[in-house]
Image (tube, helix red, strand yellow):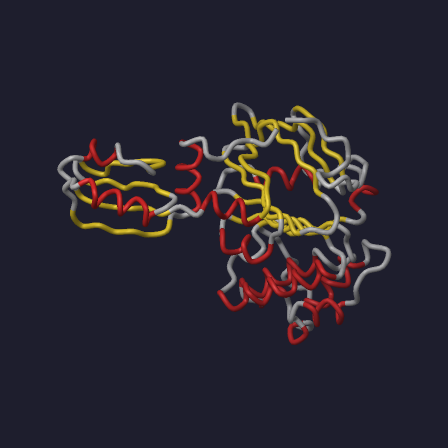
Length: 310
C-alpha cells in the first residue's frame, strides 16, 4: 500500500491516518499492513466479520494500543497524547458505567473533560434520554445503557467520532432511531467512523466503506460498489453429480455438506439458475437465500474478488 501523507483521497487533510500499520498480539496478527486516511465530513463504515481487525483499528486511533509496525496519526499528532484526543469522541463495544450515578451526572462528569461540552439537557434531548436523566445507570436496560454510551461520544462536540458496534443490544426501532441521530450529528459537522458486521447498518449510514478481513483491508470504496461486491446469494441443492454442477459458470465458492448436498455462492442467482436448468444436470431440494456477511467474505476472498487497493 502507498504511504499516508496526511492527505485523504480527495486531497483534503485527513483527520486521522494509519500508515502501513501492523499490530500483533504474540503470535496473532490482528491488523496486517493497513493504510487508511479518514477525511473530514464523511461517515465511514468499517465492515467485516468478527475478528476482522475492526476494533483493533479503532483502539490504535484512540491511542489505546500502539502499532507493532507503522505509524498512526490523529489530528496530526500521536493519538497517545491527550492533546491529540481533545476533538475525539468514541464508544467502545462494551462500556462500564458507574451504576450509582444518575444519567445526568454521568453526562456532566464526562462533559467536564472538554472545553465546550453539550449540557446534559441538550445531549439527552438529542438522544432521547430526557426521561432518564435522574435515573441511576445501574437501573437502565441494556438498550438504554447503549444509547447513553453512544451519546457520551458526542458530549464534547467532537470533530471525529469512533463508534464500535454502536447498536449492539438495541431492537430494530431503537437502531433506526439511533441511525437518525447519527445522521443529524454528521450534518452538524461530525466525521463518524462506524464499525459493524451488519451490512444493513453500514448501508443505512455510510458513504464510504472499508471492508476488512483477517486484519487486512480488502476493499475501500463507495457504499454502492462495496454492497455490489458483498451482495452474494447462496444456492443450496441436492444432486447426484456435484462435480458437474460445480463446473457451471458463475460459482464463486462451493461447499459440500454431504456427498450429494451442495451450497454454492453466486453473485447472480438468476443467471446461475438459468444455467443450471439449461445444463440438464440432476438436482432437487433447491433453495436460494442471501449470504451472511461472513459467508460473503469467505466467498469473495476465496475468489479474489476483493483485492487490497493500491
